[in-house]
Image (cartoon, rainbow, N blue to C red; front, side, top):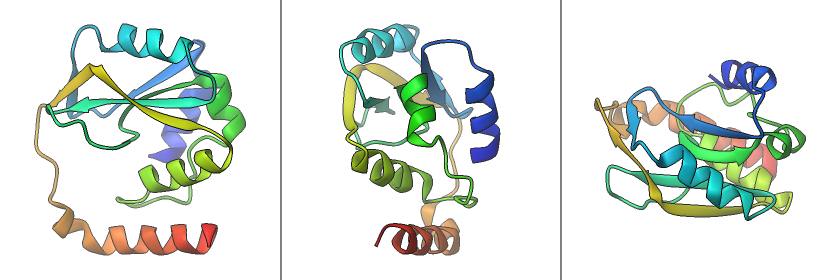
Length: 136
């Protein structure tokens, strides 16, 4: 997934990127809300509210300036299993001085359920181990 996302980022032509998993449906104003918010802050990564719960940062419903994202190293393609991309991104970009900001008005709802985290435990453990090795 990281490789496909990176290819899309390189081909993109806009100033900012909005990431949204295919199992999510954004509210009609989400992109414009992200755009207004990101224009006010440099080196920041915004995330929206999924399913009515203002959780912490998750890259699968988020927005970042394209130029900043490319300079920051884009998605790490070694994160090739479920469960590590969000933590790896946040760790690496925070070390580069980025801030992570939740945006209340950008909302999305799930259209289908994803697998339980317990069903993906082996992948999660492998990715957490990789993050530990990379950043400890």
